[in-house]
Image (cartoon, rainbow, N blue to C red; front, top):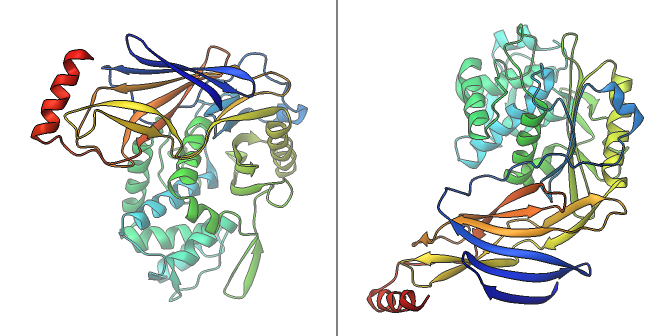
Length: 408
């Protein structure tokens, strides 16, 4: 980026930045309406490239570019449907959160009780547990993610929460935290339950985004495993794009007779990550073809321009009562704008926050949002974090701040 200029406006600062030879309009604004919170998914743009013909076989479909927070295609994204084994994405995320919070550990051992072995071993997708098996949480998660182990889900649920019901309460608490408003989980493995477990494509995209951004190390540890071995039985990963689509490294298939065939997938190329959801396809072969075509479409028909690098200063936010009168903010990951191939990006960006922000402020604390207009009248959002600590002002700094306030 070159050609940065600043001028004072009523709301803060405005700058013109050159991105790819075109001016990037940049506005920094403070407001008191509670702006902030989590990044949102922008609606699909008009005049988008035509999707692959095979996608006609997917009643539910969504493609989302994580770097630009832009939805590239949306079809029935809020329609509730039965997730089947896609439920296990929430099972994994709930366990990941427990690991992060220190409530469980990957090397923690769980003993398989006779009832679980009798009811669930070899029932549908299985890792073939046996009564009395002592299994680490690490192995259970690998089996759940890689071969969709129904028995592994129940062993995990009972082992960490005392009961299946206790674990599903944890799953639904996580869904509420992620604002998955069209989802409810009644089982940890998605086994048919007369429709009490349901979700939507939009909610699955939110969940996948949380797995990728909140737990990148655990995502890499489990979701790209090509096979899984337990009790002398080796099984291949069920993922239809893993090894077939360049950059594919996750996530999960789902199937029951009542749900049809579904898939949530992700791939990354040259730092650009896409998330896709397809639901209610009629056959596994159709799901495989749709999934591969859809992901290739996302990379082949769309291009991205990087606006800001990870942890690069994007602007400054006003601070009240602090040792400094402002603090630099950055995005915790690179910021991109996504446009159809052949269409020049024409983005504008704006920093929005409820301010001035009151000290003390911790480095890494989320204090603002970056609003990116993709050039089509639609905006996407990303959280911005403080780049340094700001302590409360001492006596002399309070005096300085007061004097500066008189001339600001």
